[in-house]
Every structure is written in structure tokens, then in C-alpha cells.
Amino acid sequence: MCIRDSPYSTKGFLNQIKRNTYEIAPMEFERPLIPGRLIRRYKRFLADVELQDGREVTAHCANPGSMLGLNEPGMKVWLEPNDDPKRKLKFSWKLVELETGLAGIDTSVPNKVVAEALAAGQVPELAAYTAIRPERKYSKNSRIDFLLTGDGLPDTYVEVKNVHLMRTPGLAEFPDSVTARGAKHLADLTAEVASGNRAIMLYVVQMDGPDRFDLARDIDPAYGLAFDSATSGGVEVLVWRCMLGVDRITLDCPIRSLAGQPDNAD
Image (cartoon, rainbow, N blue to C red; front, side, top):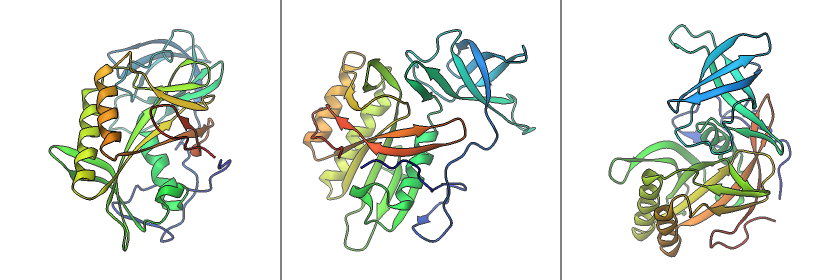
């Protein structure tokens, strides 16, 4: 299964989304993206970029990870401008061009893309749920990305992780840096399964090229152990790749997981 042009959207990001209760359209960038060349990324959340007209601007980089392989000086990047007087930075870094195609660097995008897909019933394993609630408090000092409910179905907790590391052609990996927070999320999901609920770890590959997924155990061995414990405890794993463009990003199709899971791609 591979969805080539999803006609769905999550604009508004409602507190409670019910399928077929509002019009859904593609998740599009709010403003046309502007190309430039990366000068440097620094302090994690800042990037200096030279635009095509020669101007040098500082853009917000919504990514706390290492961005391994995605932040080399000279890379072509795409920025979204804004005229919001409340925002100090007038550009946000959204995409970077690689030899294999585009990669998304904004870690908030996967949640929006998944929300549109869930609302449309695009993910077969989760299509039966009728109510989708984002950002719900659960466990200790945690929020689940999505809580799904439906008549006669167990409450399902869905955690979404952004993936954009590819060190081997065709192989997406997670994480790109040590993530104690990610390991905690896996433990929280395991606890939900133990209490009788259902839990899903959904990895969203925000880049062109990969057709397989695995854990970067060499980067964060502790996360790998937490993953093994979670899957042994009943946490389900799904991996989906996005379709990226300079105007929109949508969830495209499932890809094969090598991370101790059966093949989840058609």
C-alpha cells in the first residue's frame, strides 16, 4: 500500500478530531518556501542562511537533534517566511536537499501529518477508531501524541517520532542522538499495555529515499534496549515514509522495519 497524493489536512489541529466532521485537505506550508544555502546551524535552534538575492538571514531550526548529515554548510535549504510581529525570527527552516531528494527538518511536522492521516483512516491498523485526541496527559509528566478511542476498542496510545537519519542508502535510522526522553516514552507505552490498553510507536520518516528502517543502536544503545523491552511488552511498531514537496508534506506509505519487527509494508 502506498498513498501517492493524500487529500487530507490537519489545519487547526482541533482538541478532538472526529472523522468526517470537517473538511480535510493536504498539509500545506502556510507560505511559499524560499530557497537558500546553509551557512551554519548553531545553538541547536538557529541557522544562518544565504538567500538567492544575497541576503544573509537567521532562521529558526525546530529540531533538537544532531541533524547528522543534514546540516553541512553549502547545502540547499528551504525556508518558510513569516510576518508575525510576535516572532523575532522571520524565517523557519523546513527542508534540506540531499542527493536522494528532500528531507524535512521540522520535528513538529510528523504530528501534523499523522493527524491528517488518522482523521482520514489512512493507517489500516488504526482506521477503526472514531475519536482522535492529540496531546493528552498520561503517565508521569508525559503527554501522548494521540489518544485514539472507539466503541468496543481498547484505548490506544500513539507516540510519534521524527526520522531523518540515513547513513546507508535506503536505510532510515532512529535516533540521530542520545534521547533519554525517547526511552522514557517507550517505558510509558509499555506501562499502558500492561494496564490493558494498546500502544503504538509510530516512526515517521521525513525524507525521500529510504525503503527500510532500523534503530541506530550505536548512537544510543540505551534507546535500543528500551525499544527491545517495549516490543517484548506488547508495544506495536509502525514505520511510515512521507512524500515531501516544497509546497506540502503528506504521509505516503509504510516501509519495512528491521528493528526486530515483522515486515509492515505491503
